[in-house]
Image 1 (cartoon, one colour):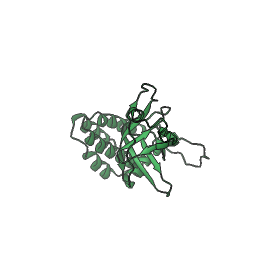
Image 2: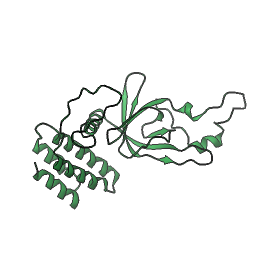
Image 3: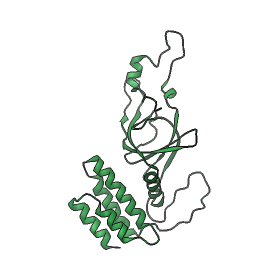
Image 4: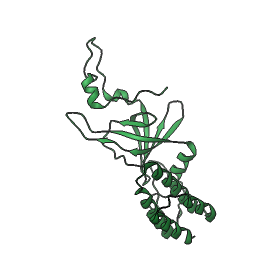
Length: 221
């Protein structure tokens, strides 16, 4: 059963949760609500592990202002039963410090299905900060390094992604970004399938600049 999203810091203080109860019981701190362990995977491949948070289906409360959370970052929740869930950040919801309340995040997120989560994670880890780049986080690097996407193609993909991110409709933008990520994954394959890539790009919104960039990208294959 999903636990209730913790009240805001201001509301909790007003309600007296930071003060000892009249019965003499110990006061509850906001760290008591942080029962989930999460990992943040940023778009540049950086991983931030071991963060304590409170995770719900559409919101994540993070009482930590020392990390930068941005839209499209992925949040992975690792559970004690061995399972894990992945969420995409829609709105970081950063709250500045106010009247003695520490700065914190109240994120709006979207839960990803397993296939989509694996695709997004693979897309980030394959294309970390450009060609021939890798990130090693406190472990031995036994990976084989290779150019994931031709530089000219990658520039077109980056331009296409920027055009899609400018879409005003949130649901349309999210769906379109997933198509761009899938197309980029195809481009990174040893033998990119032009038919598949064309079909993915054809599913993008019919907006002038997006259609133009997509056509240029297909013409380069």
